[in-house]
Amino acid sequence: MNCDRLHELLDDWTAGELSEELRERLEAHAAGCAECESVLRQVRDRPRSIADDDLVLRPVLAATTGRTCGQVERVLAGDPRTTGVELEWAREHAAHCTRCARFEAWMAALPELLPTLAEFDPGPDFTAEVLLATLPGPSLVSVFLRRVRDHVERWQRRPEFAQELSFVLTLALLLVTFLPGSPLRDIPRQALSVVQLAGPGGEVGGVGGSDAEGTVGHELRQGLRMRGERLGVGFDRLGTHVLQTGKGIVDGDLQEVGESASLIGCDLRRLWKGVQSPATDPDSVCG
Amino acid sequence: MSRSDTGLESLDPVVERCREGDELAWEALVRRCQGRVFAVALHYVRNREEARDVAQEVFVRVWRGLPNFERTGSFLPWLLKITRTCSIDHVRRRKARPPAEDLLAEEMHDLGDPSPRPDEIAERNSRRSLVHRALQQIGDLHREILQLQEIQELPLNEVARMLDIPEGTAKSRASRARAELGRAILRLEESPEAGR
Image 1 (cartoon, chains in turn cyan, green):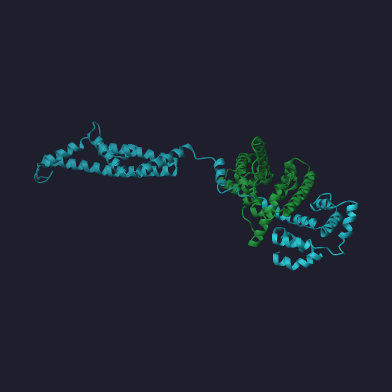
Image 2 (spheres, rainbow over the protein chains, first blue to last red):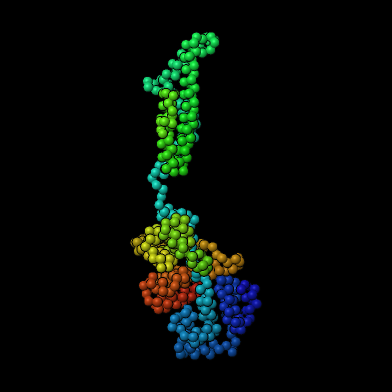
C-alpha cells in the first residue's frame, strides 16, 4: 500500500465497500503516514448523510448501555474469553466506529511490528567487552615471555644499540683472551711467538727457517686451524639454537624454548672444550 | 523479523559447543543474543548505559552457568530469565538514585532489517517509533508481558513460568496489555506530537 493507492481507494473506503483485508492495509498505511492520516481524518469528519445509522444508534446506546467501545477493544485485543460471535459483533461495531476501526487496524499490525523491537544494538565494542570479561586470559609465563620480547625489540630499535653491542663484544674478547683461566689466554702469546720465529721477511716453517722452527710453526698452524674450524662449527650451531629459542619465545612455545636453551648450553660447553683442547671430539661433550 | 532470521533456532549446537569450552562458539553465541539481551535489559532499566552494563553482567552469569544448563531445556527462555533477574536486581539497587531518563525512540538502533524497499522501511520505522513510544506509556506489568510474549516471542508457558503466574492469567494479562497499548497508540496519534 502506498499513498497513491490509498487515494484511489478513498471513495470505496468512505462507502465501506472495501474488503476487510484491503481496509486493514489502507488504515495500517495511514497509521504510519501523516499525510494520508490527515486525508482520512478529513473524510471521516465530513457531515454524515441522513441515512447514517449512527443517528439512531448513538442516541439509543446513550440512553441504554452507553458506548460499547471498551468492550470492543477488549475483544479485538484477543481476550481469551471472547466467543466467535462476539468477535463478529466487535468487527461490525468497528466498521461503524472510526476510533475502533483504527484500534482494530493497529491490533492487526502489532504482531508484525512488535517483534521488530526485539533487538537493539548495544554498541560496537560490546562483544569484545563480554569476551574480555568471560574468557580466561593468557598464562603468566606467556605474558612474561611477551614482555621480554617487547622489551628486547624496543632495546634493539634504539640508535645506541650498535655502539653498545660493539662495546660488549670488545669486552668479551678481552675477557676470553686476557683473564687468568680463560680458554684463549695463550692465543696472543702463541701468535706473538709465531711472528718472532718468522722474523723480518721470513716464513714460519718455510725455506728460510730451521727444522725446529718449521715444526713449531706447523704445529701452531695446525692448532689454530683446528680451533678455527671447531669454533666455526660451534658458533654455527650456537646461532641456530639461539634463533630457535627466539622463535619459541615469539611463538610462546615453551617446549621449544626449553629444548633450544638446553642445546645452547651444550653448544657453549662444546665451544669451551674445543678451544681448550682442539683434539677433543666436540660431540663427546654432550653426547 | 522472525526468530529464524536471527539464527536463534539453531542455537542448540552453538550452546553445546560453548559447554565444551569452545571460545569461538561462545563469541558466536554472544553476537547472536546480545541484541535481545540488551533490548530486554533496556526494557527494564530504561537507560542505555546501565542496560549495557546489565547485559554484560548477564553474559558473565551465562558463561559461568553454562555447565549447569540443562540440555533438555530451551536456551533463549533461560537466557532471558537471567536477563530479567539481573535487570530487576539492578533496578532495585539503584532505587535510591534518581530515575534514569527514558529511552527516546530516535535512539533506537536495530540489528539489521530485512525489509528491502526504502519506502517500506521508512513507513515501518515511523510506526515502530510510535509503538515504541506507546510502550513507554503503559503499565510495567503490561509492558513486561508484551516484551516477553509479543516482542521476544517466547511461548506462553515459558512466559507464565518466568513470571510465576498461571498460563490463563498470562493470556488474559497479555490481552489487556495489547488493549492498553492500542489505546496508548491512538492517544499518541491524536496528540499534536504524533508526527515526531
